[in-house]
Image (cartoon, rainbow, N blue to C red; front, side, top):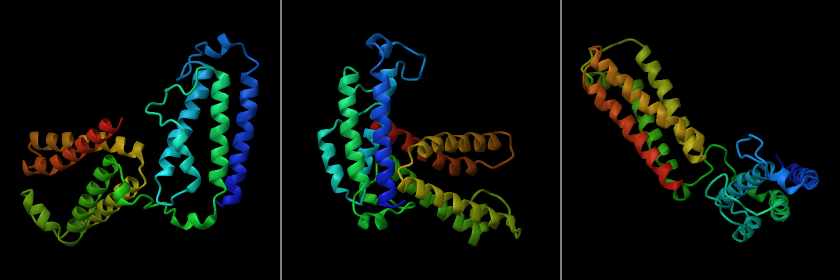
Length: 247
């Protein structure tokens, strides 16, 4: 993706939004407000939601280490706190807002290419700028990587903690390799502020705790396994709490 291509796409987006609002303007106000059964109800509600989503993302990009100068203009825009927050009372007001937003996107897309090398797809957010939820994911990822290293290099140390017998089988080390990669995914997604991933891990880590508890309850594993799974549960709670506080 080059600035030239990004600008072309931004200009196309602005043109299509202009045409979309032209079409919407042919409808009577009651038709624009009529509930169509869509997630955000009416046509006006849906157009408003799209503008809200774009605004939220631009605010996120404005905090990027690339330091995009054009996004300083966002100080003149609201910072929505919910996907359905109203940005204008009617279509005319929303159209003015949409035009301002699209103009900003075009300016942003055309910024000098000097910013591009700073856009690391794997580690885009320095720790100082990470949200609490992202930090919880990154720290948990580091813990998972360390666990994987133990399984890879000295698996019997971990097995003895769980009251399991020593092994010379290669599969425990193979598991360590997989766990290391899983931890790396956590770190990368945390640094990328991938909120949907954060939410998914809450249920995943809670399931680890429940399943390990079931193994102990049925006598298939020894109690220390529950203590090990408790780390997953505490990590999930940390992430859930951070997301809830930020909502």
